[in-house]
Amino acid sequence: MTAQESLQLISESLNKSRNDILRNSAKYFVLWGILLTATSLAIYLLWHFTGKPQWNFLWFAMPVIGYPLAALVGKSNAPIPQNEVSKMLGGVWSVFGTFSLALSAIAVFVVPMHVTLIIVIILGLAECISGVLLKNWPIIIAGFLLGVGGAIFALLVRNEAQILIFTLGGVLLLVTGIIMKLQYK
Image 1 (cartoon, rainbow, N blue to C red):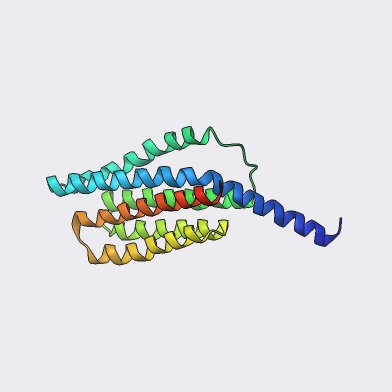
Image 2 (image 1 turned 120 degrees about the horizontal axis):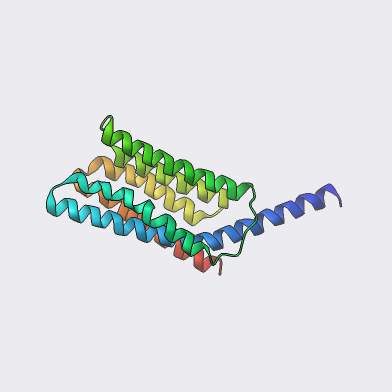
């Protein structure tokens, strides 16, 4: 096998793996989009009608509910061999989750900060980076809209209404998942 043929084989293998990851990821985008939308709407409505920002602690329920559901949804996936792309994607979302939890805990227990602004930016960034790794424009665009648009929204809007940016984020994840499902049938 020539060097050119080897490179061609590696490229085809990575593209097939990318497509398999995208096909399997669509249901996770839909799942997390629904969870993010439902959680943010519940927090917004509860905070709005009671005037108590403590409803933000419900954010911590989202991973408690989401991870078992994701594991359940993932049982039907055909196994995809681990490669650099899938490892990097896992790393990106693990870092996002760790930063989100750590910054939220710091904002609650140590020093108050504009946590909505920070999390919406890193969520958009994580989604954008995922789109770049997967070479998928809908994911890149949705991540950019969420991160940059969410930052502007978070700076312009006060109190419980800021939570609605995560509702938009959930809708963007949901729509992205549906687009991926249609693209990679």
